[in-house]
Length: 93
Image 1: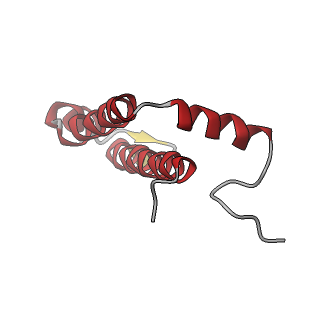
Image 2: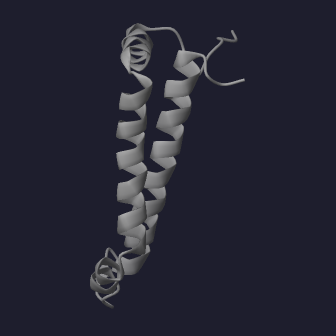
């Protein structure tokens, strides 16, 4: 059966919706602004990339590959989390 909203109905979705609704606009901006600022600093910081760009292997793959994979996952998680918060708050058209 089709369930409306970003989450199926359940105790976790109710707790998340209560948390999302309790966020003030300023607090929401602070939480997600910090999240995306951290993403930007980590993604653009050359010393971190140089340290991860060592040709050493981790599980047969270069560390620089894991570095970009982790940054991409963190940015994607932030976008998805912000979408769910705004959906719970009714801010998405």
